[in-house]
Amino acid sequence: MTVDPGICGFPCVIEARKTGARKVSLEISSSDCEQIQRLSGRLKTLSIKELFTPLSRNPVYVAAEKSGCHLSCAIPVAVIKAAEVALELALPQEVHIKFQACRESDLNAKIKSSSV
Image (cartoon, rainbow, N blue to C red; front, side):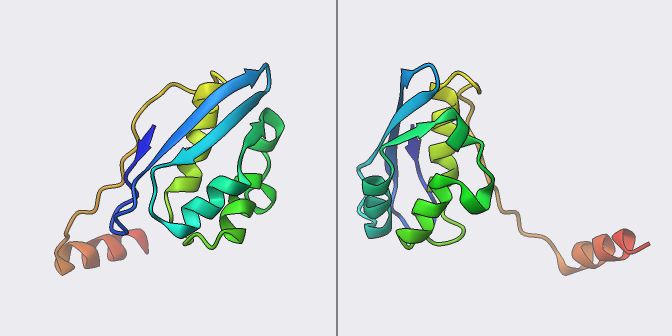
């Protein structure tokens, strides 16, 4: 998969290959981001058990933290999605985060309606 993480301007390529019934190999390449390069060095394989480990102990997020990745970096979640697809636990579907400008009056109306 290719990942364009946004404003940082450091896209990358993530390759996840099934290497056994419950394991994938990972390769993160083509990024000029030093943090993602460090993350790539720390993440070589994932097991299905590791894939579903809670966030605070998940090896992808632990490696991202040790690599100095920004908290909102999209690459760690993309790694997990790639591994899920490689293990045939998910279908390869694009993910989008879209920002939309809103008027202050619309925002105030939403706040009022949610506090009722």
